[in-house]
Amino acid sequence: DSLMVSAGEEVLRRIGEAGYVAYWVGGCVRDEVMGRPVHDMDIATSARPERVTQLFERCIPTGLQHGTVTVLIQKQAFEVTTFRKETEYEDHRRPASVEFVDAVLEDLKRRDFTMNAMAMDLEGKLIDPFHGREDIKAGVIRCVGKADERFEEDALRMLRAIRFASVFGFTPILSTWRAIIRNRDKMRYIALERIRAEFEKILYGPDPQRGLELLRRSRLLEYSKLPIKAAQVHSELLECLHLLPAEPVELRLSLLVQGLGIESQSILGLLKQWTFSNRDSEQAAAIARFDQELMEHLHTLSSVPDEERENLIRPYWISLQLAFGKYTAGLWISRMRILIKSSKTVNGASLLSAELLDLLEVWYASIPVHQVRELVVKGNEVLEKAGRPGGPWLGVLMKQLLYAVASGAIPNNKEALLNEVKRMVKSIES
Ligand code: ATP
Ligand code: MG
Image 1 (cartoon, rainbow, N blue to C red):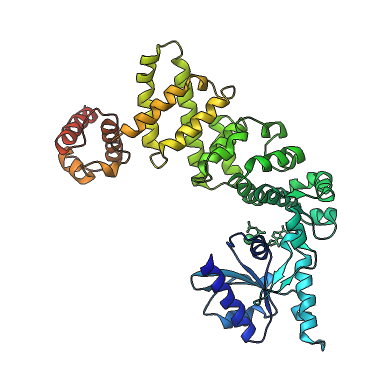
Image 2 (image 1 turned 60 degrees about the horizontal axis):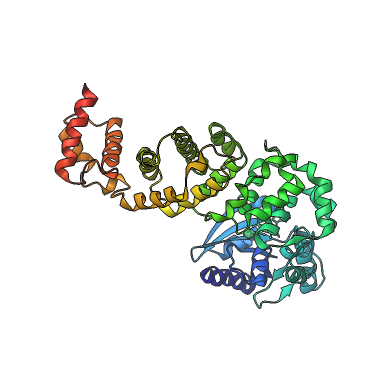
């Protein structure tokens, strides 16, 4: 953060020394005014893109048609955008300072909300024509200009209003909220990718529940291209999202789709359609599948006495841990507790008693290895012992070894492991 700020100051300073004006604009000014950490800095300047490129050693022409150059400096990246009016001003004879105040106003006028429509110069002087600072103090989200017009121009702004409300705990002013309701059908024009990017910030933010509640009331998602019904956005599971940490993201993502009541075999397709990354989609789908499997398994055990039930759950629990070795038991337990709370939604969850959850925690602690690389025998030794050419079988066999050790069937020592390899290879070959 402080590295970024000092690199950003260097960008403003260099542009200033070359005789141009430059400001921080948008989200970074808002974050600075709010006293929040700044995570990306946008800069607006009177210097043309070609000139910006000359002033810095490393630049990427990100969006030359919009006058945007990405400046790389001190391992940080900054989007530097030339004032739109710059060309018009070129031959004017008005004093430069007046021209550029106009140009900054012009830039700020095109931004979405008053809190995002402020600029700041190197000395820290704030340019705040729409009183964004007051709105921040009051905790309100207000469109720059007429809300209906601004939402008509770009319907995504409605979702951004809800995103900022959710992340900052703010409230849209009544006229902005009413305009959202009036214009919500325009959500259908918005690419799913842009919707997903804003939605992710709600989902992984500090108060996803608030965002989902506003989404439910506004029905914005229902009017988008997403195949989601407003009624779906209201479930007990979704009210527990904030109980899970924001990272790794697939934990909340899988709870989201489970909460929306999506069948586990449809989850992967839905998330990919929604343009979530392949990695996030696959992880979330895998978690949901495992949950379902575990719950179904528990359900079939309902007639089995308690002690035996534990024995039958343990293998599942261990394979779950091995499949998702990077999550701690605590994370899984909190997921389980959430699923129990909403046992209506997930069959069999009610069988997970509090004692059983405690037991799962104990089991977790007793698992000696979680990953193949923790085995004392390596792949090449297994190959040698097996005396057959490498292939996909090797990975499968290593996983079986891992399971054997994790479940306590064999100890993690060379002799035992290599004996097991011999036995397994025999059974592959027969
Ligand atoms: P974050 O903290 O998540 O980066 P942000 O406000 O910086 O939030 P960005 O998407 O990075 O959001 O956009 C930077 C700035 O660009 C915004 O603060 C706003 O001034 C402007 N902006 C972004 N999207 C829009 C939009 N759809 N309409 C108008 N202005 C926008
Ligand atoms: Mg930003």
